Amino acid sequence: MQAILGSGGAIGIDLAKELKKYSDKIRLVSRNPKKVNEDDELFSGNLTDHTLVENALKGVEVAYLTVGLQYRTKVWQKEWPLIIRNVISACKKHKTKLVFFDNVYMYNPQKISPMTEETEVLPSSEKGKVRAEIARIILDEIKTGKLHALIARSADFYGPGIKNSVFNETVVKNLIAGKKANWFCSVNFKHSFTYTPDAAKATALLGNTGDAYGQVWHLPTAPPLTGKEWIEIVSKELGVKPGIQVAPKFVIKIAGLVNPLMKEFVEMIYQYDRDYDFDSSKFETVFGISPTPVKEAVKQTVAAFLPK
Image 1 (cartoon, rainbow, N blue to C red):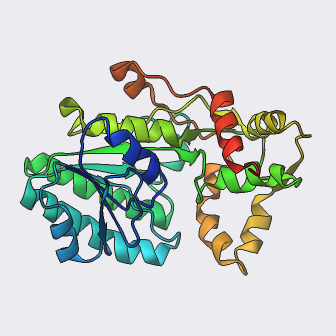
Image 2 (cartoon, rainbow, N blue to C red):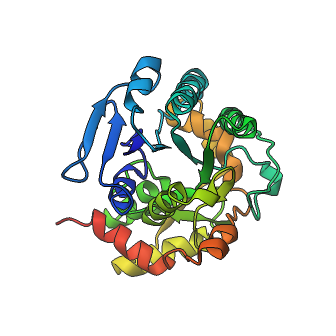
């Protein structure tokens, strides 16, 4: 039995499909879980509930924590510590291996080109501080020998059908709708995006590879392109002109005064005002697996959002 905690997250659907290669029993845990495979076992509840998490991990060999919380600092500060404590406690009790699907918010903003598994952890944002603390807790537990776990990190992501992808929302959907693609700060800086089917395939592989545990892994991600290049590739796939609308840093800050989502985004602007280069060479070298070429990944992503 393998379980996905937060099965409605960014890679939940793709991960559930991939896990069938390794286990005939998949348990999906979330507030409102929905079957991906015909024989998936559904387990409904909130991961902040200690008893629920304990029950959800009974008989589970590997648990994948992929939950995506509401994009608000206060929510992260309140719920992430509860969730991580609950999951670690349950994993230790049931001798369940843990795979934590992470992002890169904890890295030093001055050292994100390139980012490797060894990049300095020194977050500038409040959300980054939460993620850094979660990672520290997991790594400290691993050192005690009482928790068998690994951390799988993704860059910003995109892919077919993903609802909470900035790239999908501001570039792909806008161009499909005949609007200009939106970008932040400057289209001249390079930016990495992880293709979610690649992330799911790699996360499942890591979770079922004994030697992968006890480490941090960057999931396979194609070399970064500039914002302009990303928009041009999507435009070419759609056969439209690459219209671009750039929101300068000061505009984002002003918007943050009145728009709740922009307010939450202000502290993350640094990811767009410099090169953001996510290096996944460790994974690619060890497993001999390369990320899907950008043009093919964009083709599949665009196709998923076109009117049927």
